[in-house]
Length: 264
Image 1 (tube, one colour):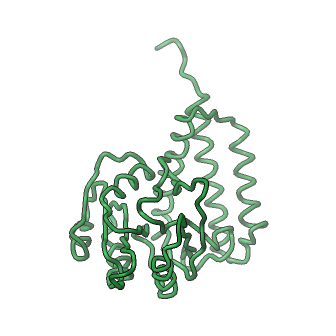
Image 2: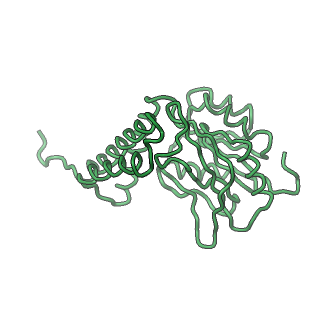
Image 3: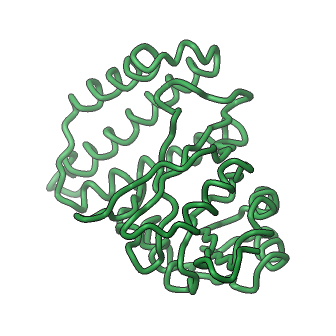
């Protein structure tokens, strides 16, 4: 456990049906953090029992508000000085652990910290495609800020006067179990993204489906050197293009397609 003179740190997760991942994730943090907070959105597997092996701070909010709002709810349960956000399919490496502990011990004013995720996809670590370094803000003083209210692709709110520092070491991210998992996950993200944009008053154009999908493939596979990731790089670039098609197509359908006035 951290020295009593240093600020305390919590690990926080939002989960649903993560029994197969949660144990391995929590084993990478349980011996050096002060608090583990888990907010479940209605798991039907053994997630709760796995979580209770590590913490009694297990809460449930089945009225799913979106990723950003759900994280905001979870943060309300945190008592520690710092919060480190993880997903159940992520693992903290020893180098990252050391960097986190150093940052918390230093406790620099108005400072947030980003971690680098190294993604394991379809049997290979992806080091190109624009996926590495995959930097995300995940560590910050609990009272300093919180996540925004985006339904998907949520981000920590960074306001004027705050600074972001990069932590050393990677978090290993086991992104997808298989192709079915990818399709299910990417489809839900795409529909949540388009619903969020439509709610904001954004309009979809059919041309965006074509231009954005082509740009996605060119960027990932050529500009970001996805070809250096072998077959996985090509597959990931194609699948990401498919994801782009789905989200812009759904936005166009939501905001442009109209039902006929006459009912038959």
